[in-house]
Amino acid sequence: MKQARRPYSSPYLKRASVLITALWILAIFAVLAAGLYGIVSAQLSLTRYMENRIISQYLAKSGVIYARYARKKDTTKFDALNKFRTKQETELGRGKFIYTIIDEESKININSAPFEVIQRLPGLDSDLAQKIMASKLRPFALKEELLLVEDMTPEIYGQLKDFVTVYGEGRVNINTAGREVLKALGFDDESIRIIRQFRAGEDGKEGTEDDGVFTDSAKIIEDLRALAGFSAAHEAKILQVLSKGLITVKSENLNLEIETEVLGRPAIKYTVLFNQEKIREWHEY
Image (cartoon, rainbow, N blue to C red):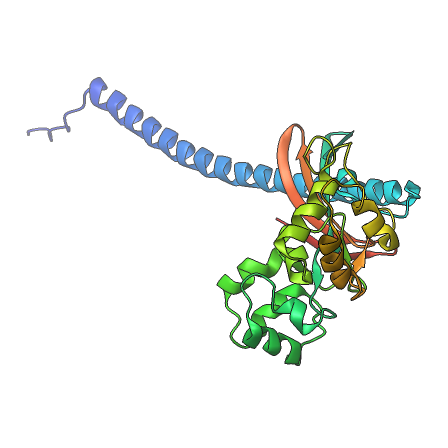
């Protein structure tokens, strides 16, 4: 009687089978490891992001405290460009903040400015100025609400947004106002040149230590008379604008631009609009 033939078996086939199985196991572990790495990496990234965000917020709050304290110590009755625009940098723990102050009252208050001032703002004409004046949203809570005014476009808003505000008593700081704002107030080109010449001081640059500063709105003409070439005609034109009561030399509402760094890396940026009583706007980007 013949015996049944046993299947052909080789030690090489057994070893190959074991090797293939091992490779499959390794492949499975590799996939699992990659997935686990992705999960852990995402969690670590989220943790770092939240940590940076929390630290950045505390740094920004510290910046506001520093700025408000500096304002409280300032007992002068006027504000000028050489008080602002200079970057202040402070290290705190694992991070630091850098802030610059922008004078919010170097702008036109869109809620209280008269029609003739509003219509002279960049991008506006008499028709759109009238629609702003007649808007049911006025007084505006935020200047961005101007985008809801009939016929206001993002392009027009982009031209005027840097020159308007909804804060303050409506008077503009003559020490910090730019050309566009001075023009909207009614100063002609020659008057603007004279005002900025006085503000620039001997070095011809505004925002430096030798700046000329108007310390009292009642003495603006007196200050300008010291300039060579200041004539009676210049005086008459400037007095015409000053008589409207839209000029001041002191600012109460300021815009703080804050950059934060955590562990030497740039983090979140903030803009904070504040006065001595409270924070009025807080934005981060």
